Length: 261
Image 1 (cartoon, rainbow, N blue to C red):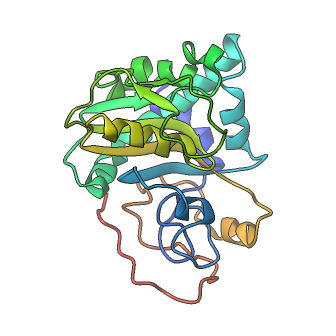
Image 2: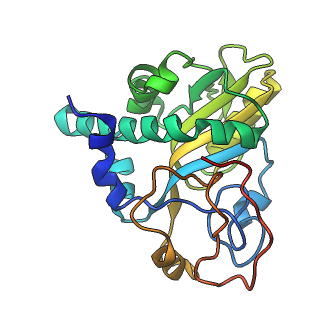
Image 3: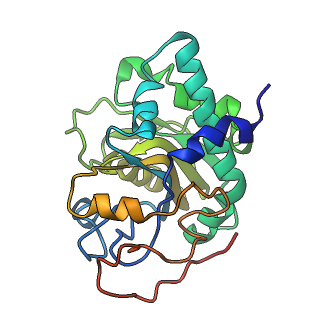
């Protein structure tokens, strides 16, 4: 049986660690043109207390392909990709869940949930729930199915507090919500809003990939400047500020990481 380190070794060759600092959205860590928040995050109610993408997921790149494929393939290939992503999540949480908890202002997370699938027919058997509830050691004992799609018709890729209903009370709990990809953040911010309205004290999120379009603005130049290979000992909260490695924002904003590995 391969170890977590062995399963994740190939991913270290194409994953790109997100950074914080100038020229990076303070919420979702996408690159900006010098603004503290990207266009979408500036217009979305901020229910999440902290968000940690494990890696940037560049459109048409290898991680993007895995995240798009693992939930659509049945059989051996789908299970292999799901197992590899489980190892990625396991390795990251083992090293950095406490960094995210500190950023969210809590000592630890009491409960762990996943975001329901946008495809109602696929939600019950979605591999992400299997990954979090059965495979990943740091999450399986805390996992609860806290959220379900409400059935209310809402626009795709837009924040809407009616998108989800809470199925188990999270009263006064610190909740960690896990999703595979952040594109606009609408699903996670909607989920966090539902959980807080149901009584959750704190809601933070981990996503495996923060989607990026290589062709937008200066993204290509900034991506090339990121550290390689992927450093498993660092996350966006415990890394030194290097959000503008290509020198595109015009200076240092004095950002300091809230924790260290």
